[in-house]
Length: 78
Image (cartoon, rainbow, N blue to C red; front, side, top):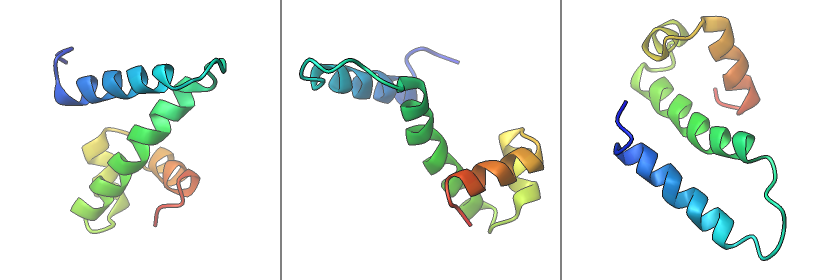
């Protein structure tokens, strides 16, 4: 995947903003923060596209349906 894709650029800009506004605080849990910011809207979007069909969503995302179900519960997405 290209380093110049829009999503990569948006993540980089968001991280730049995060580090700029730390005000002396140490960075914390960045990996989980970024995953949560990207993964939740991705899952919501795909679930809307497939009309809530978890099997289709799992196929599109190339993940196991049980993994998808776990992530939907984690982010409280129905």
